[in-house]
Image 1 (tube, rainbow, N blue to C red):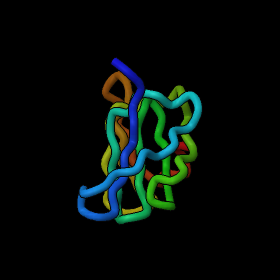
Image 2 (cartoon, helix red, strand yellow):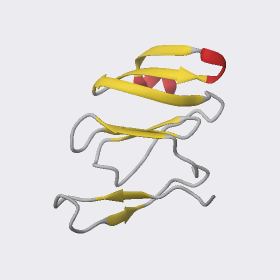
Image 3 (cartoon, rainbow, N blue to C red):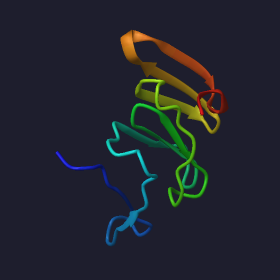
Image 4 (cartoon, helix red, strand yellow):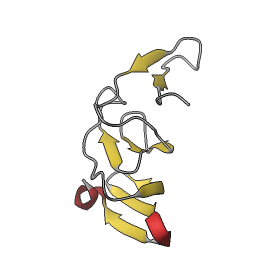
Length: 94
């Protein structure tokens, strides 16, 4: 299996552009956007974008993020390793 790729469309899927991936983040398990510019990506850590995916920031590599759900920008519920559940502001998981 190869590294993950993030593609973005702004025209309903007619064309796609490949977005840059931060060094050291290679295998994504979940991607969720709360709106057209604010989103999160899980790869064992939690990465955040506030510009439509052009940049991804944050991520504590030892956190063990397997899946997550957001209800609004800045708030997240995370399913971590060993069945741990985390809930709160995204900033505390960066």
